[in-house]
Structures are given as C-alpha cells and as structure tokens.
Image (cartoon, rainbow, N blue to C red; front, side, top):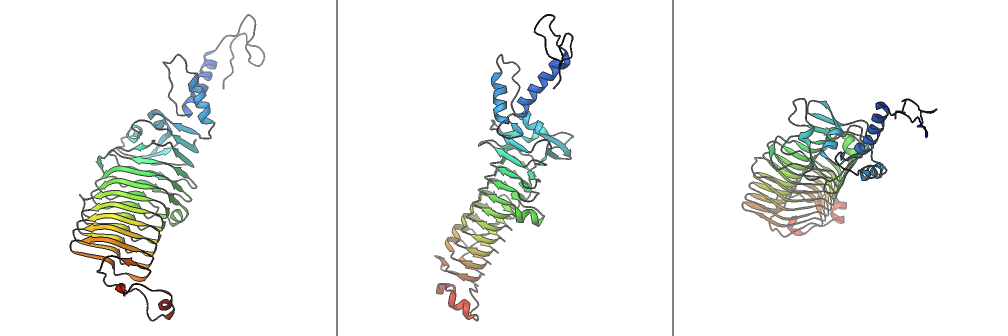
Length: 391
C-alpha cells in the first residue's frame, strides 16, 4: 500500500482535519484502487465498472477469501488469469496459489481462451496447487481440443472436478492424468469427449509410487467416444465406487474397456460399453471386489472380466456379442461371483479358461476349459467346493 505524500499532510502521512487540507497524489489514488481491485479479482469476481453501487462486490470478495481459498475462478477472465504458459501446449496454475475454487458459469471455462504462442491445444498442470475445488456444475471445457488436467502436485486433493468436451472430434489422449504422489481424486468426472486416437478418461502414472499412494473415490468417466482404444480408467490403483459407463468406440477397430490394468478396485461398475471389436468391463485388472460389469456389447468379443486376478463377490450381467460373449474369461482366483444373462451369437460362456474358483454360479450352461482347483492339494479340496457343472 502507498501512503499519500502530497502537500499539507500531517506527520505519518495522515490527512489534516483543518485547512489547508491534504493534496491527493496520483500514486496514492492508484495504490488504493489497485489494492481494492486485487481483493475483488483474487476472489474471482469481475470488476463491475459501470455499476453505481459496488459495495456487494468487495463484501462478496472478502467472504470468499475468508473461506481459505487463495483464488476464486468465477469468470472466463479469472480462469485465464489463473494460468501461465510454461512450455509448448503447457499451462500451469500460477505458483502463488495453493488452493483454487471454481464457481459454476454457463458454458464452463474454455481452455481455448488461455492458448497463446501459437498453441492449438493445451495440457493444464496443477503446479504447486494442493487443493482444487469445483462447485457443482462448474467444469473445464476443452471443446474438441486435445488436452488434459494433469495433477503434478504431491498431496493434492481434487474435489468435484469436471473435465468436458463438446462432442467434437480431436486427437484427445486423456482427460485426467496422474503425475504426483498421494493425490486424491474425489467425485471427479470426465465426459462428452470424442477422440480420433486412443483415449483414457483417468490415466494413471508411469511412476509406481504415484499409483501406489494415490486414490480415486466416487469418480466417473462417461459419454466418451473413440475411434480406436477407449478406456474409462487405465493404470490406476486404489479405486472405490468408481463408474465407467456409456463408452462407445463402435466406429473404431479395437478395445473398449471400463477399467484397464487397474488394481485394488472395490465397488466399481462398468456399464453400457460398446465396441466394434472387443468390449471388456474389467481388462487385465487385479484385486477386485464387489464390482459389476453389465450391459456390455460388441461386434466380435465381449468379456465381463478378462485376464483378471483375485476377484471376489463380483457380478456379470446382461452382456452380448455378435460373436463370443464370456462372463469371466482367463481369470484366476475367483470367489463368490455370478455370471448371468450371457448372450453371444457364436458362443456364450459363463466362465472360460479360468483357474481356481470357489462359490461360483452361472445360468449359462456352457463353460469351457476351466481348471477350478488343484485336486492334488487335499487342503484346497477339503476347504472349497463349486457346482459340479464347473468341474
């Protein structure tokens, strides 16, 4: 803040209460103005320069800033001001902000507005920000552009974040990407994106420690469409109550999977998936409990669970294929699971090429190439049993 240094000021740069009164300097007036503007702008509010009474602006700003967020995004201008370009197609939250709150605005926050330097798309990085909070209905709008939200801040908490497109096609690779340790994605969602290449809703990290220490709670990937491989969650660990649904690569030539190469998964659901080739609710995943794969369809092959290990209390229901449909395929160590309503025009199996199973059931008569237990091991034989149809 700048003290007034004009004529007739008293000791300590105070205004006198008697003539001759103090003279206001431009430096002082500009300092007062900019200090007030900083409070309003840091709260994410627009400056209402044409309003006769703006008392509510400063009051609202003070209330917001009192909620312990460093920065409020409440307009497209405040969204643009939040980021700085740190490389080609790379935009990071400015280092001044440890926590950011996104208010709901019509149409969301357009990523195209922050692009500069000739960039035609942009990845957004959390940088030093440790807390991202989205109001219900607030979202980042990538339109048809390539780009993602990469969390590269250790210990970051991301709550209610929403990454969307507009249904237009682009070379979109992922919506959320993990790039740090101890990250929590809580009730985050991505939707309405159409890709011309392989696409992932939530992409785990290539660094093992990032995946081991991070978690996904109540997250969802939905209304995604791809021309090649399409995944809701890929290479993620520690997933609870997550949902992959309405994923469609019927125009593509490869795999559509709700959960791919994920582990430590509980109470998650893969539903309404469709592919021109292969559809899997859970593909090459491990340590899965109380999960569902339902309403899956494909032209060639449909699997509820494919090449998965350590599966318990899971359900496959209503999966279909113009070719082969299998509830559990090439899975190991399965217990208390149900495979129901399997319909394949070429072949239908409740369980196929699975090894080690207990307390399993299917209403599908055909089950093939299963080795349910090692009968040479007396302890396994005595402790576990399965319906005769599987042996």
